[in-house]
Length: 279
Ligand SMILES: O=C(O)CCC(=O)C(=O)O
Image (tube, rainbow, N blue to C red; front, top):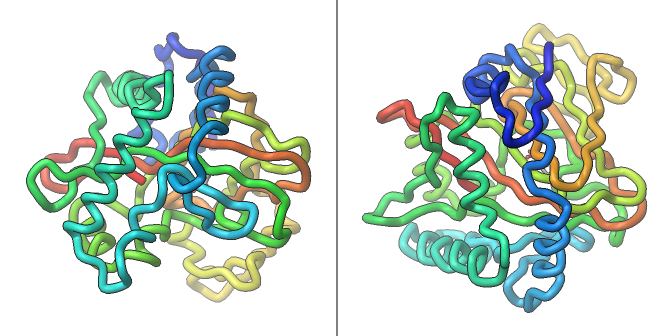
């Protein structure tokens, strides 16, 4: 599978990337200079100044901002509660940062979607919206596997924690073929690179021991031994877009330092075939 590297603002070879990534004609798209050095510095400074109560510690060593909407909702979560939490989270994303990160995603997505706008995904009620993106901060603290270090495909974050929101999401968009995107804001000193395996969830639907994927015909692949993969080292300010819904992937365990990313997911809405993004 090919990959594509472009440098903002020159998107000439990447104008149809969302479709090319979904059909797996392109394995990943790396956009250099999504944020420039000054923007990266300013974003990280603002992030470090946030009141901790606006963040959610998912596990020791894995924190996200804005606070997860599903932590506020109870397990029998109600959609109105969920979406008033996402509205607050979206406000927090704007209120605490000098750089308008959502505007940057809007601009760049349009460039790689044949000039068509990619909107933040709507909720069920009038004017309700998902949170567009979130920040993920990962340190070695707590050890073990956490969040993106676990070999996975797709995003089960919402699914695990918010049943009715998940139902809404899967009815609305092509959830299984979603793309993952994230911009790197700070590299870990050791670990933290993204590895994408050349194996599709459709061919290998299950995984054992965070290591062996099992094919439909029973074949077993050891992902620790396979060479059918690529590991991508990114620089701060780079944006990565890939078919995280279809391809098994993981983030290498952060062994030292702190890795900071900002991202979400994007997919086609069934009703009008337009692209939307959310976290
Ligand atoms: O590095 C990140 O922020 C998440 C990458 C990832 O595993 C995903 O988007 O599915």
